[in-house]
Length: 428
Ligand SMILES: C[S@@+](CC[C@H](N)C(=O)[O-])C[C@H]1O[C@@H](n2cnc3c(N)ncnc32)[C@H](O)[C@@H]1O
Image (tube, rainbow, N blue to C red; front, side, top):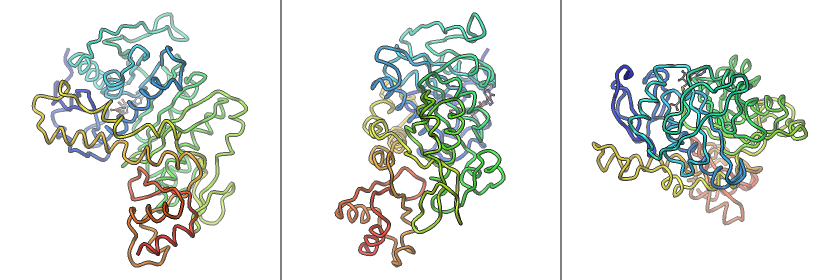
């Protein structure tokens, strides 16, 4: 039976044909914002860049063998897949399908019907077949495998308790805290957890009571609140992981528009997990801010104060790679698409990874994050210096500087604050 309102209208996300509901307007080339307008459980085009990065990271793990040894397969679960766009993109756009076992789960039967019907109407067509392994508690695994995706309709928490995965994606409405414990337990000895959080008011510190309740954290709404949000989520994951003898190694951590998205490698290691607090602290508001082990005066946290990404993996997330993997090819394009649609879609793929590879090295180590808008007042100059001038000034002085993938103009540098101010003054 066809789902209600089927087929809606067809859109291309990455290289994958998706069905939008009839009332959903055609996405612009840079859709942003929460899914409220599209209806719960339905495809939010604003999340396309996060899904593109997910395709790239999973492809990178297989291609560069940093998760499982060469030749072995990765069991990947999209635990809250809604209309199945992410698992369908993993299936269609990742080149090494024989090394992937994709499971897609959701509680919402209507969303899942859209997912399966979309997959049936737009098959990958490589005749990939596999049989799911039985779960810890049942002789047979539930759900069905269709054209290489194992679809399950059920509670994500129950599913994660029943079966181990090496890659889990959590993309809930609002806060992911309800799902973290079971996902971390489900992850094998070494595995990747990808987490989206849209409760940014709590993570950024404006919803103070929910911040304290969910994350045990305090925030300050200033230039650095988006970085804080990412670090508070990472700190929460590290704390729960440590309870299960697992250590956390960030691969990519971003604040993108209306959500936080982090991808971490989890490793079972009692020794490393015991030291989890080495990377936990507070951001102390001073000029410039600094991290400290204990809160003092104006502060936000507790939060993760360690590296935000893996320099090698994030360093490979280039625009060229994004286009190569995820840009629509002639055979993928919907019939009614014109040149403008094609150009917009290409630009969105580029935007998904903008500044990531260039800033990977700095963000994987100790760095100073600088909000360009704060420099006018801090340096006592009438005009805010341009990013370009700051970059050439800092590099000429022998420092590294890279713009970051942030909602505002921000850069990371290994220069000290006095040097940054000196260059801001001379850039006037
Ligand atoms: C934000 S949507 C997911 C969007 C999706 N990942 C995408 O990229 O389009 C959250 C989904 O979580 C599902 N959900 C909520 N609680 C769940 C649970 N306990 N188990 C399984 N699915 C659940 C909802 O039905 C909804 O489809």
